[in-house]
Length: 250
Image (cartoon, rainbow, N blue to C red):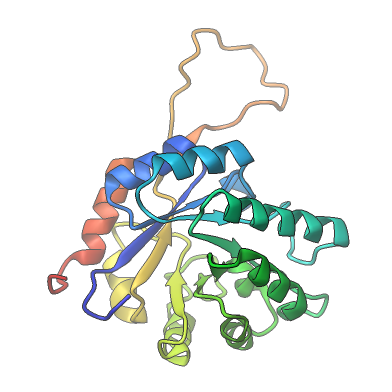
């Protein structure tokens, strides 16, 4: 992305419907995942394939085998490698990964293996950076690995609270990698974050609750139902407009 290009919004889409809504709303890229309520997990093979068929904008897939921390055992890592290979075979544009070692640093050997498996796909280092021991060192590690971007909240609960560190990350990156703020970004704070951090790419889910279409409602959920949330195209549209407000035309 060049300095004169308009800011880009990547939408974390938790389903095929959400991915299509993101595109309709003007997103520049989709990060497909499942289980956003857990921070995002790897979506199914079918979801990836259908999203690739449906989207005209770049498609990145989150590769995260389970909820919780980012220290993985051998079986989990083997699953991640196979998922990256699957994404490459389906023609995805990129994957988002993040593996840490037991001491809280980037696990460079394992991340390097994932980058190698990605081949021509771009690789993003996701918010594992925010729980690493030293996010600025982890940024340098991501650069050394050949990642094209890092997704970060500035090691805070949301990007607004982490704006100072995000600004430092953008300055440290110095064009070597894209620093993409994410977490809690909406149309109300997007322009301020853009201006305070100097970032040019942003990440949000733009999700809204969906009413249940079923005519029958069971008396008890028994732990098998939860809120249905999906990306809202109009929310995406408002956020894209907010990011571009006051910017010179591309």
